[in-house]
Figure (cartoon, rainbow, N blue to C red):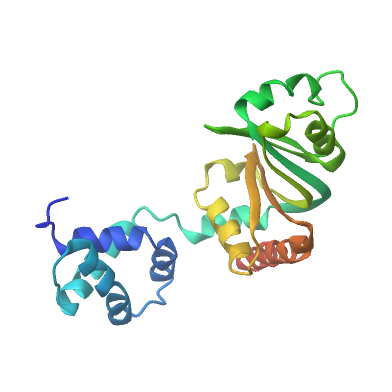
Length: 228
């Protein structure tokens, strides 16, 4: 980008990098002078030149107004959460292997007519690895059959918190970001996060599952009060 780009360009990038600020602006709880001071140094660093605080503040006012046009109304999120349910699955394992290693494990996957379907079973394929998230006995069995050099990560003592939403969850932006941010600010690390139709599955360490569940339960209950 040319060094001659205007201050609004850099303000826009700074705000998009902090989406939580846009939500706060939407709720009308932001002091624009304080926000301009917060962004000032970062904007000058990105641009490689100086801007006055007043120019940054005016750019924040202009840019935030245009960005807010694309931010979904909070009542849509509240409606989805208010009509969602929560479930916990304990004793979950997570196994990540190379793509080549996974090919050798496909015949051992608990699908089709082979055995009982696990309570939880997800296969997530990335560019360089494949992760299996399932009941601990299933993952332990796959781990025992995997070549050691293909195993990238094997986690035990995991748990799943599953949020199942109404059909509207499929077309409502921001649901995943809201629930993941909600547990993140409580200090809960997400081992994995996957979605399956109307289910959002958060995988956390077993020691964190109670806190993660209570955080999302509070989120759902608060959404219900907003809809009442």
